[in-house]
Length: 229
Image 1: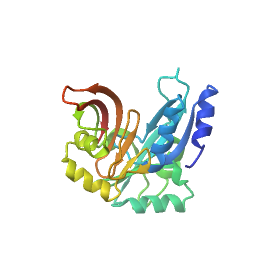
Image 2: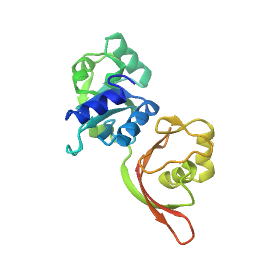
Image 3: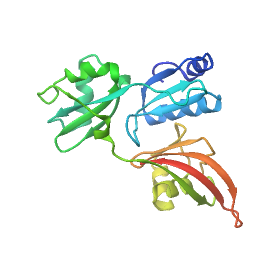
């Protein structure tokens, strides 16, 4: 984990301060976020857009409703792939932990970044032209929604099928391929997710189990999940 460790983030929040990591890959961000929730401090996880893969984890005192880093985005014309953007940033000495997701379109590529890194990114010319700072809304692919669902169990394959509206067998194939993680750990075939757990499914997005509300008359479980994708 780049930046402060989870225990250092907890200590900061309990001391009345706000502290953040740098950008982390999904499997690296979800584990400390879950640990912070278990520690009883406020926690947010932000990647600058719904269903972001790379995210910044922030710990804050519970009396602070929400806190997080200042983020922005820079777009490069005539750049068609993520690797070109990241290579140019590395060559310019920009720390990888300052960069979030790279989103490509027909005309170029945009990168989410910590606000402090934006001037250096604008100065890059990976496609022959300097970067252009753009609103994060331009990268807002996907959406966040809350869903009430009934599932036979808290197995990740059952929850994932409901969260993303796919078949359970199809989602199970993603688990078998190692593309699904629970709180940063690769999900096994029989993995479960309890209230507070976060699940990342590569290619689909992420969901978090907010609440298990009890059983139906037939013994199924009523759950509330928050889905990004």
